[in-house]
Amino acid sequence: EFRIGGGTIEEQIEYAKKILGKEVKINEALNEGDMIDTIAVTKGKGFQGHVKRWGVKLLTHKNSKHRRMIGTQGSWHPNWVQATVPNAGQMGYHQRTEYNKRVLKIGENGEEITPAGGFPHYGAVKNSYILLHGSIPGPVKRLISMRDAIRYQRGVTVEKAEISYISTTSKQGA
Image 1 (cartoon, rainbow, N blue to C red):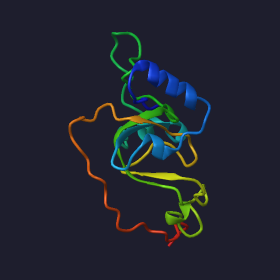
Image 2 (cartoon, rainbow, N blue to C red):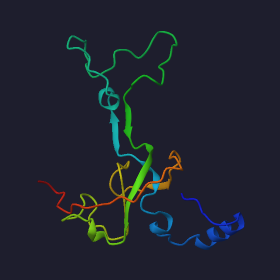
Image 3 (cartoon, one colour):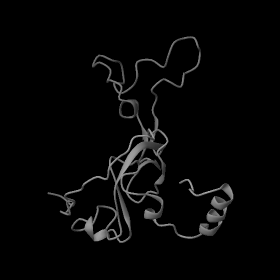
Image 4 (tube, rainbow, N blue to C red):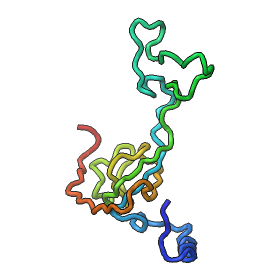
């Protein structure tokens, strides 16, 4: 989801028609040091209880029947359960947007960053790659959408990061 730069609107439309359906390389859309937003679906955890899903405290040991519940579903009136009550339910597998991620490096050779034995649940990096500063939502191999940062102050310039070392030791254990 990147803006098409250029001269007039007609020139931008012509360029968009020219690249429509073709593969666009990551280094054609981004530069090192740019700020982007990442959009992805988080890891799914399934149906979880009150304590794990919302982090509410356990009830006391003298409580009747249940300890991993919430104390009350709400007041008598309004006579429905409000949406703000921390109930059990689906945890994870939600779309989340992470704002202001800095592009540290864009590379073509995956051997530079692939650890010994490959990444767990992914393997060796064979194509071009992008290194971002911070965490990204979702499990390995999940599709991640990227766009220009919408909450980043435009006047602030970010210099290119100096990466001195990338560990390629095995991630398979100690």
